[in-house]
Length: 235
Image (cartoon, rainbow, N blue to C red; front, side, top):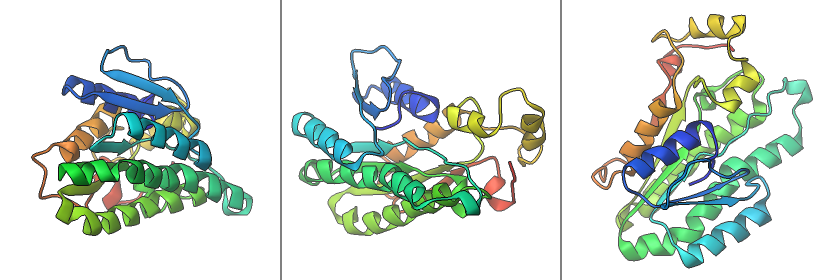
């Protein structure tokens, strides 16, 4: 998995450890969890070459049949300030890293006739102001999943997306809305269920898609968003 050092990724790593999995995490910082079944590898996943080298090295030693791509970044900017460099960096992080992860481990999945690929996108894939690079690349993850689902279904490999809405207690969320601020109180009122989500809310959805019993669900996007994907939200 990626992005297990904080937020949604950290909660997801804990959930997999609780389920008895061996977890190999790739992220900018080490995962702070302490378990003999956890290995943490430091890598900048927006660096395509470094990512490819890291995932190929891991796969050569311990090929995986379950992949979860949690790592992400926002780059909040109005249209006038968005840059091609933003698109390239987040394209590498959100899309390129996903491709490298899958390519490195695909032969192992095909041999096993089993695989689970879960991509963490965002409710912002539906559109959100000041998120040009973020929304575009997170929306791209939906296209990846639907395409890969069609290619890989015959091999027993499912590919699905979890798209979180506003999830508190994460670094990315607090970049936009500082914890305890008036903006946070106002934004919470826009969520139909009346609260922000937690990293554990998202982790439970990931665990569902990763379950070996979830073999008849592929190419799908599950919005874990408190209802914000069926309305509108500004934050």
